[in-house]
Image 1: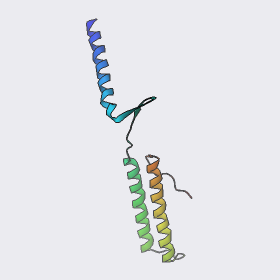
Image 2: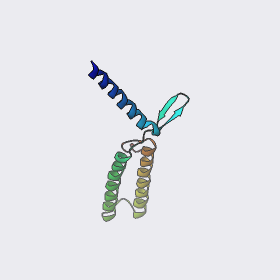
Image 3: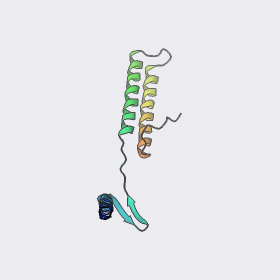
Image 4: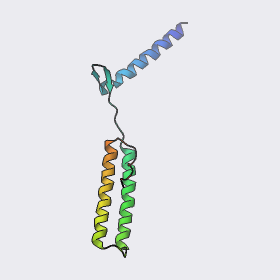
Length: 106
């Protein structure tokens, strides 16, 4: 069957062309090829944005309606600590290439 032989050749050439197209993103090492894959931070960024927006809304509500058992200095200190904790979670998520924010350390 001559048609099948041409089809096999076409599939082989297509596969080789696909592998060759990926070659610039890899590098050769002694043990073989290493392929570099880029991480998409979009899901983590969106999760951080959501958590940040919720925190800001909550902080603004706390400023507008202060708690009776907390001074403004205590509130400001607590809110600063919460902002730092969120930033630390975001940094941990980025370094781990996570899709979502890691849980808070309590």
